[in-house]
Length: 93
Image 1 (cartoon, one colour):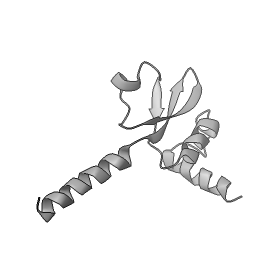
Image 2 (tube, helix red, strand yellow):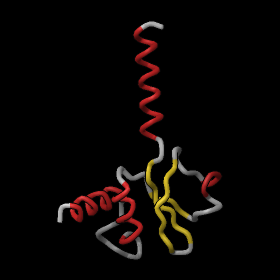
Image 3 (cartoon, helix red, strand yellow):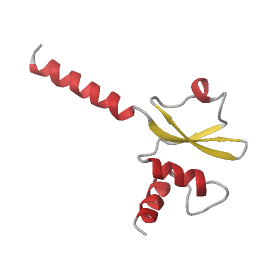
Image 4 (cartoon, helix red, strand yellow):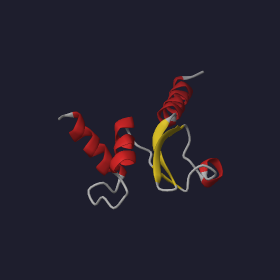
């Protein structure tokens, strides 16, 4: 195998690993729940369990912030990025 083929294979493996088990927040009946998925959740894969899904998040702490404080009309926590920033601020307290 030449160097280019090896490099392409390593890039593909890195992409697969980075997508593995990212945290998401699932919403059902007004309850927010952190879950992990190796692939982007779709209606076919997660629609039977959740009405909506938020994510992916970079960290579990960001997903947990969204589950605990997000939605519910909170104007300071509306996006994945907002949740990640809040998790970082809470960690540094």
